[in-house]
Image 1 (cartoon, rainbow, N blue to C red):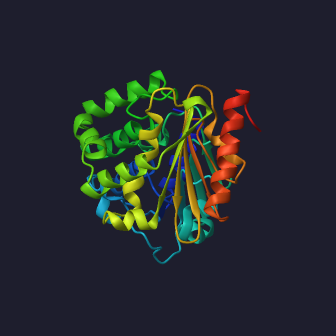
Image 2 (image 1 turned 90 degrees about the vertical axis):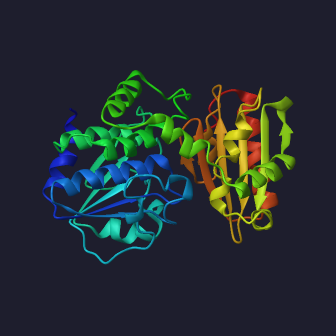
Image 3 (image 1 turned 30 degrees about the horizontal axis):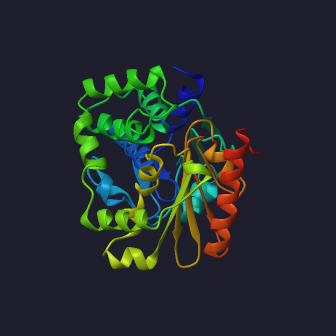
Length: 325
């Protein structure tokens, strides 16, 4: 048991009311970890509020107690607030004010670009998923994994490792997965719900996005654009874009895939890379961040400018073959 895990556990055990909030556009790792911690703390008699900007995407509405997640901030104050994968306070979106105003702030993350805010800071870039850290935290609280907690944690581990396909996976990842399965998590059911339950609108949107796909750098770079008109045409939502960029990266020879999501007043950019191309460093050029193989940022220039600048940065990363910052 690490010292920081014990410190975080002591901090939470001293609290009566706890806020646990994930980042904007929450994913399986942040949501699963948040819910696992909430379940553990409630077994210890603490009052817990779970927040997630934009709420829970439909694909994750199988997670135990997902209905409890609030998309709008409740009334404070909180004794302790936990930022889950929020590299900065601002990443908590509408929950940022509550996060920053708590008596004690706990910052738990595995992203390289975490700013280090908070009173208890636990950032481990070696972890393949933040769920690995939250599993250790639940143990430090003295709570045994049950099927619900195990399902939440395995969802985080499974999704943030790309079903254990990414280079970030380490031996500890498999050991944790084995433990979670023994405690009642069912990986085949999680996989089916996350990856094999796409809606008709999301399938049609994927098709439209693939038709618009552009290729450069001798096939090593691909990108596509999804805008509001495309989403409306298929009767979908922005949540239906989630797996498009990963599909682009799955094409043979691709080392960098980019999805440009053109919203009303901004462009959200998602990057997926492999073979030594650092997605987080490309994103950092534009004020974003993430992991070496998966990162993103938000831009407020015109779509044409954002696409041009991003593609140029990706081409430079591919051309030089070295870190670009």
